[in-house]
Length: 106
Image 1: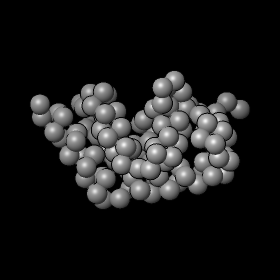
Image 2: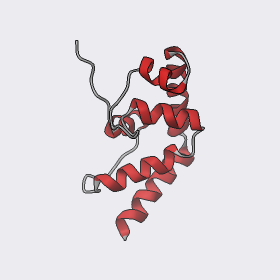
Image 3: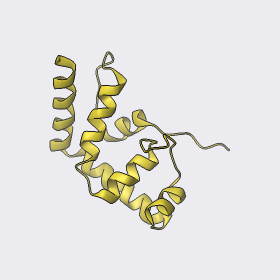
């Protein structure tokens, strides 16, 4: 069974963020990078690797993510869940919405 490649839209859905349909992709990605940068460096790296937001653009399994970060796959999964919980927080959701609004207004 082939695993599903994850991308930024999967991250948006996981965090419950809504994006107006006419918003350009580059603005959405920039807003995500802005929000992810508020996490710890490890959490940021885990999310970027997991959702294909890293340099290579490919999503990685928890095992590959853990290996790249220097932790076990279970710790990568735990770090992933913790980071998603933080992204659900109202302050980050409001920051994401404000970034989109500001970027699309220009």
